[in-house]
Length: 234
Image (cartoon, rainbow, N blue to C red):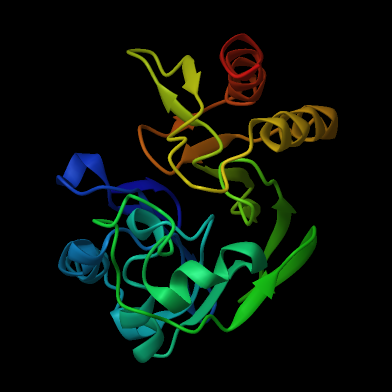
């Protein structure tokens, strides 16, 4: 599904898959933001091909966190030549292919992968002429990353599972699953406070699940999500 010029939704609930997968086209191919659950690889490739892109043109996979519904095909895209980027504190999940032996969620499995780039603080990336601010926002997981992408006059915030957009008019925002053994509500609140203080002005917000929110009012979703946290996670 084409959302904007050079912005595509390749997998997620609309395709009967768990975990949104986005592609941003750039001068040298495209990069993915998250790569879905292990069973979504065919769906991702099929949609890449539909829009004239090859799976071998994926230069990077930028992971918002290490859960299997977001990092599940990392191994497959790495074998095709993509660089895997993840928060340092979540890298163990990719290496182990699960949440760790202490987690009761043993059904969460994915092929093991040694990530290429580990990020543990705010940084900036430039990929194929596309500029990306990366924000370390622990809470949902210790290694959660948000990506703020500047592409084609759009400012796109990929929020992962820190919060997702919902509702008939896209005006509802919720934080997501709390089952990770390292979920930390206090850190999540600190991350929300920091995100709110940044006063970002995204024209598109896309979470790890749910629908994208686009337009001049997209930035209001940050306030809505922060309010949801304050009312439900303290």
